[in-house]
Image (cartoon, rainbow, N blue to C red):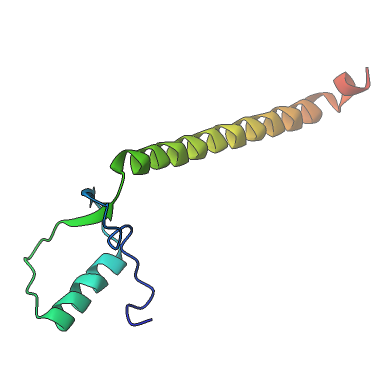
Length: 102
């Protein structure tokens, strides 16, 4: 692959008409900027604004909300399991599991 596996979302979709701003660009964006500069003789500004070219920005927003919600719920579940484990360990340490045997 000439582009080194770089994929620009929906850039090759002729129905894509929107861009979503990338706030914290990964190294792949900076590498793409250098590649474009070398291939096409493009000179970049000091602080470029990177965007993801997408067909449906609302769908991308919904996807990110769902991922965020899943991470939050997973974290809450892990927290509750940890608290339950700590409570059981404290109970065992203080009662010698007497409450569970009764």
